[in-house]
Length: 270
Image 1 (tube, one colour):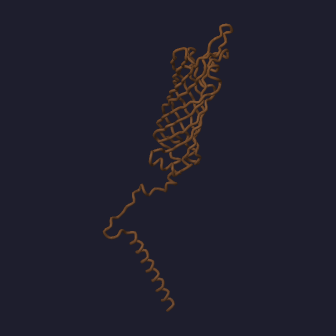
Image 2 (cartoon, rainbow, N blue to C red):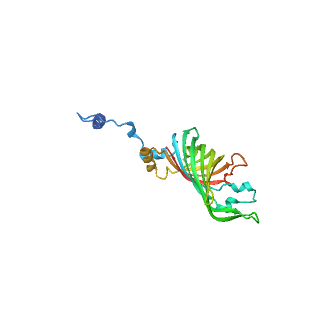
Image 3 (cartoon, helix red, strand yellow):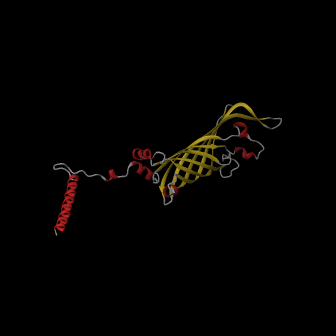
């Protein structure tokens, strides 16, 4: 009986000590008398920056996209002569030249990716020697005069980027496709004649892939998102086939690309 009574007293003392400990912990969380109660706003209870950045790497933006690309270009002017003459190749050389493009698009998130509609402008230039025709043979020969060709492509394009890989599989790649209506304004200059101006219309098709950079430095990506509104940055790599010949007109310069033009650049989404 004495042992049973002693055991009951020990259990009761243990319950009392546990209740006192809980009460002390509750009082420690309460503000002191006269002090205002501090509430933590919901925005400050977010995940740490690293977790936010990792989550943001797969979040699609709905807003604006800015793209700066370097693109190779060689116009198909010589194709008009069916191999009988190559005035562009003789004057400017046979290699590809590089130019730049700046594009701005309005985007809209969809269930599988991001759709966009935008405008773009670019520049390509080539300089070389003028040509003259030998009266005895009829062949085109280089002269001592300098000449140049400046091409300013203006594009209205629609694009779609498949963000499914980055969202669901956490692979920082997003393939994309683009179709554009093109207008290539051009200026031809020379030392012995006045400049000539013109424009040629057409269309282009582009396929490429974007490599998201958010995961390289997640904390920096989160800071950019918070301070400047930049949602994502990505490197882009694509190929373009442009048909710019005034839709088959025999009276216009053929400024289509010879084969596929290569491009690489930087994409910034807001």
